[in-house]
Amino acid sequence: MKKIIWILLFVFLGSCENVQYLDFYPSSVRARVEWKKGPSSTQENNFIVTLWDTHTGSEAKPSLDSHYEFDVQLWMSNCGPSGGHPSSPVKIKKIAGGVFEVSEAYFPMKGLWDVNLKLKKNNQLAIALLYVKVEK
Image (cartoon, rainbow, N blue to C red):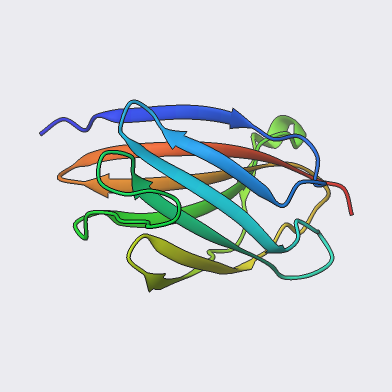
């Protein structure tokens, strides 16, 4: 079965805001990313991701079909001819329906990082991409 990939590219340059919103296009899933610690290259970073289907939930009452698998990957793509590299895997803890705590997120170098949020259901993959500039 072919996988369908939906991608929304959301650009966030700078680290002054601690909340960003993303859409998993063209699905009806929306995400709120709230940084609790970071982004920084000098410490462990952690953030809360709240997911909801805009047809059945809201930011105040997040809900997400339990059949979705949620994953996060950190990737540095602007590091010269090497083509980029990932960071170590993050730890994801489900707090409630549609709410996840992401910890042990490390950005070992300053620069522009991709935070890939992935949802998978029935061999369909939805991706929201958040660019984060790590300056300290």
